[in-house]
Image (cartoon, rainbow, N blue to C red):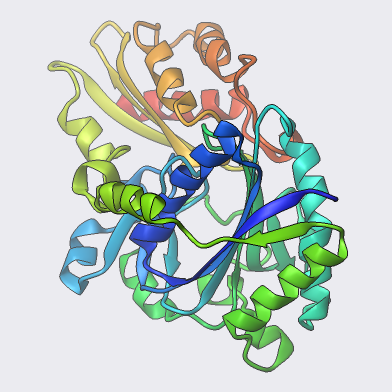
Length: 365
């Protein structure tokens, strides 16, 4: 690879900190500070909502509050809602300048071999990529590697389950969308999730994972410049860390809030479409079948972060029964030159979003 990456070892880190340090570090990348690599491990049990997820379709927030679970929404990072227990999940990321590394598929292809080589070193040789992101073995998910435009820079990052989480806790609060797992070989959540400890028959400490990944990177020609967070960076992180756990941020996309704020006299409906990824739509329809308000959500990795909000806004004023117009409105945003996602063969399409909208319209009727 030949590039020099600033390396930040986040260690065991509070999710409020780890999920807000990326925008801070990403700004450095955008301003010409060079690429950055990070590694870390979840240091506090929490529920982590994807940027595009409808929180009310994935979590019972009242039960989360009763159990005292920390809930956060990932800033700008897509994907689904996940349960992370302290010490059970290792994470890593490579952050790069968007102008120098503009193509997400190219970057995924560049970093995937590093992940596979690291897994082999750790005794996880049976694990491989399925699609662009999932790390699986015999249909069971160990982790993932995804590429995404995160506004300030392009990110290729991943996670791996290093030891068994307490899934009974997760299953007390999770709401699994009806079609979420229809394409999974293993449908029971307990069987679907697999850990490095289970695969290799012995514990995998974070430090062993970290050192193996760093060794792989250096063997591939990557030069690492270890530099911890500066005082200025830590101050910036502290300033915004509490925001991602606030009720307003968590409910950024919320079907309950959408229904509560729907225009008077409209009928509200929701619909899911499980194509390559899960898409969800909400619509408020008037008596003359006009869409007065819309909400778009889902489990996907697509950029920029406002793409689904703009797609929802484009639907306002449409005839709810005019499929051609609905698709044209969706495509006017989702197929725009500024919108991109890795591995388009496995990504979300305008037709997926259209089907979700049509199901929502049918539900409203």
